Length: 234
Image 1 (cartoon, rainbow, N blue to C red):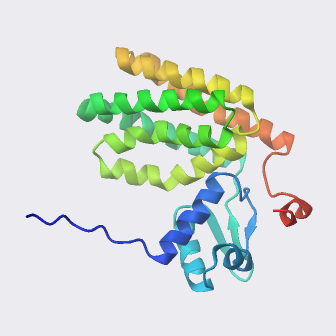
Image 2: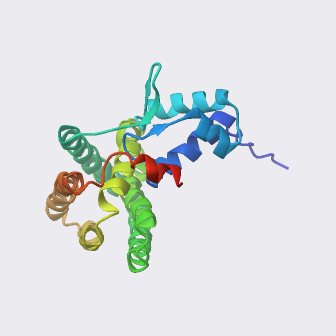
């Protein structure tokens, strides 16, 4: 009988970090919002030590900014930062997709097909949070299949921020999700048929729309922390 390896259990700090990360990506914590230790102690039922360690993990991922003597805050962004992220993301994702098609074409396209169907279901149910999660899965699939740890690590530097931005920026706009759904389906069809030129143009347009939607979200007041009265009710 061959014994299989036992995966190490996550530490308490890693578990706390995962809970906070989920809350940020789901939009429960807004961009720029302060995350107090007292609030986390009460809601998670853990001591301050694993909370501080969790914040260090999230700070390394770029999701949280720890300010001495002021506390921990969800990251904030700017039009300039969004533009830089979009450029960085396009460079990485195009190369990851190219490699994924070379080394794991069937598995990669099968996963994209499943995700696109799930995206369509989330859109039909008007589930903005689930749609955002699946959107992230679609774009991260290339990095899961590209068989290049350096590309995966490079994507990891911004993956959390991008996922959080999807929720905070696109969730209020149902029409953008409809447009996004059509773009994802079109990109999948291009990859299936080998239309690489079309895909390159489509992914550039798709990623570039982030800057446009950001400006709209900013002007409409959908970014930033909630009013204090709203936070007290949660």
